[in-house]
Image (cartoon, rainbow, N blue to C red; front, side, top):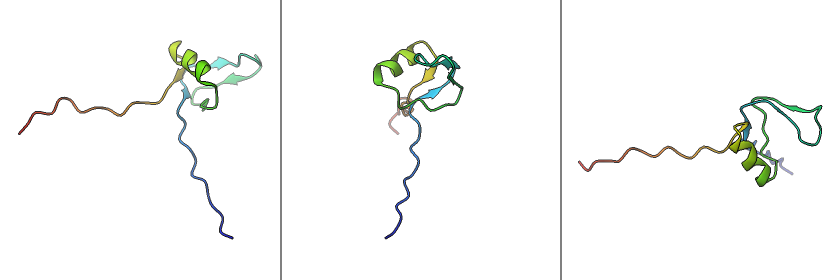
Length: 67
């Protein structure tokens, strides 16, 4: 049987400002940590207060002028 290797998922939400866990104050979420596993409401709150960076939207090209 061939082993299927799972490609590592790229984190969608990453810590940009260190913070402590709400349930365990001894745990510190450090800059660069993946917190994509948090629930949507918690992620939205952390993004809104600047502790977590959410998924980046693809950059749109400036208005293209017809040739």
